[in-house]
View (cartoon, rainbow, N blue to C red):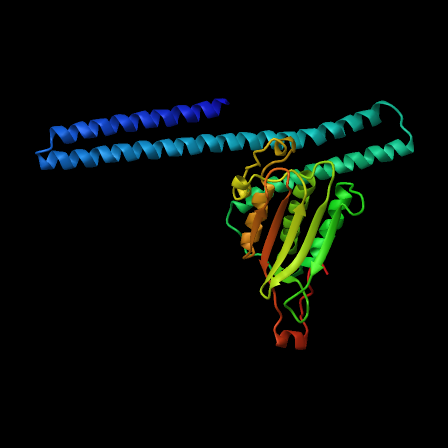
Length: 318
C-alpha cells in the first residue's frame, strides 16, 4: 500500500468514526430533549449539518489526494518521455564528436536522432494540446474533410513511424447510406488527424510484440461517420472503459503498466471529438482480449444544389 493509499484510508476511517460519534451524540440529544420541541429540532438540524460537512470535507480531501497522485504520475511519465530521447541524442552526438565513424554509421546515427527528435516533438505537442484544450476554444475554420483519405494517410504514417512490417495495420473503407459514397465530415483537418494518430499510436503500443491493427472507416447511418481502430493487444478491464478518457488516467492492469505514456492522449481524442460534435468510445472484453476505439462524427451530406453546382471547398485528405 502506497503512502497516498494509506492517507486515503486514514481520512475515510476518521470520517466514519466522526460521523458515528456525531450520530451517537444526536441520538443522545434526541433522548434528552424528547419533550422539548425547539431544542430537539435545532439539535437535529445542527447535527445533520455537522455530518454533511464531515462527509463533504472527506470526499473533497480524497479527490484532491487522488488528483495529486495523478499529477505526480503524469509528471514522472512526461519526465521519462523527455529524458529518454534527450539522453539518446546526447550519446550519439558525443560519439560523433569523440571518434570518427564511417558514412553508413553516421546515417544510422542521424536516423536515430531524427526519430528521437520526433518523439520529443510528439510529447511536447501532446502536453501543449492538453493545456490548450483546458482553455476557452477559439473559433476555428472548418472545412470538408475526407475521413477515409485522412485515416489512410495516418495508417501509412504509423507504419513508417513504428517501423512496422507490411500488413501489421490493415485499412478498410465502407461507403454506405449515400449516393455519392463520400465519408466526409466538416472540421479541422489537423485536429482530426491528431485524433486518428493518437488512436493508432495507442493501438500499436498496447499490441505488444505482435502488432495486428485494423482501421475501418464507415457510415453506419446517413448522418454519421465512424473511424474504428481495433487492436488485439493487452485489452482494457471493463470497469475502466469510461475512465480511460480522463486526463492523466492510465489503464490499471499489469500488462498496461509496462507501456510508457503520459495519460493525456485519449483525453485529447475525446476533447477534439466533442468539439466537432461527435464522441469517442471504447470496447473491450477484458485483459488480453484487445480493444476497439470508435470515433463517431456528424457526416457532411451535400444537398442536391451543392452537387449540381459543385462544392467550392475541396475535402482535406483527398
